[in-house]
Length: 298
Ligand code: NAP
Image (cartoon, rainbow, N blue to C red; front, side, top):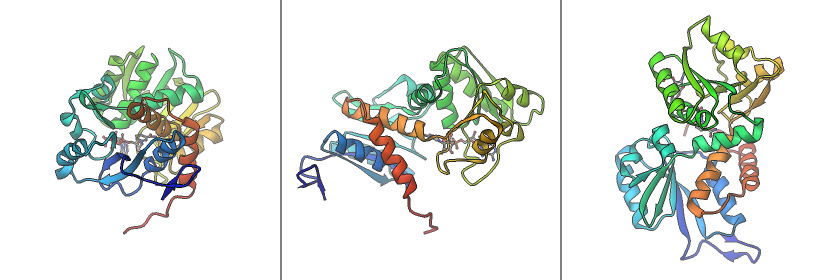
């Protein structure tokens, strides 16, 4: 393997590690995104996927620290478990209740969550979100909590839709703690409140996996029109039925690629101290998505 204009052999003895901790972690865009960024800045870092089972996560994190790893991303199912292994947590990680980025530095192991800042930056770049805007999000899992933190940081009004009312209220509470102008919860089965809340929103986000395999959201989510923005956190496929309906109805549409690259850029900044080469990372992600291997059952 070689890198740089001279084509010198690489990796070398000084090359340091950044990894993705997950299980089964079979396919991820993160190595492509981060290795393109490291090459762009000529950094002697390499990003690898390291599948780790639940039972091995603690020993894996301690081992990475012992071998001088610079950092890691953390994905399903370890995002909550690694919190207890960190010496410090950022406020975003505490608010979201999960860690997706680890940084080993002189003070020990820092746990951060860059999903919220990645989404905040993507929303700002894509649709110029303003304080006081009305947002509605479907979902009450980890991604919805990142949406709540981003919505809070942007001082917007957020409605959280879930099939479990108490879970939706918990996510709304996260938005309030993050600075939201207001936040409330609506039951996904409420045939009166849900259509009214969606019609009242400028930005409608999907933070469930519904759409990855062609599933529709509840009907009112398919009735967006001009002046509204449909924002799906899913990026593969690039157009879900939710985004397709919104486009047909005259709404603006965005998929989750901006958030994915945004969270990667924030992690990159944590590990290197440098502003991320966003355009390079984005181009690498788009290219990899277009050329990804076909799914297999193996
Ligand atoms: P999660 O923690 O498992 O939460 C999934 C949420 O979807 C839960 O609220 C769940 O509701 C709801 N849900 C699942 N199936 C449902 C159904 N059939 N009907 C109604 N609600 C349903 O997952 P997550 O980590 O939040 O991820 C959600 C999505 O966001 C995934 O597609 C993921 O790929 C995407 N995401 C994208 C990015 C990005 O960078 N673009 C980042 C993070 C996540 P219950 O709790 O009631 O089951």
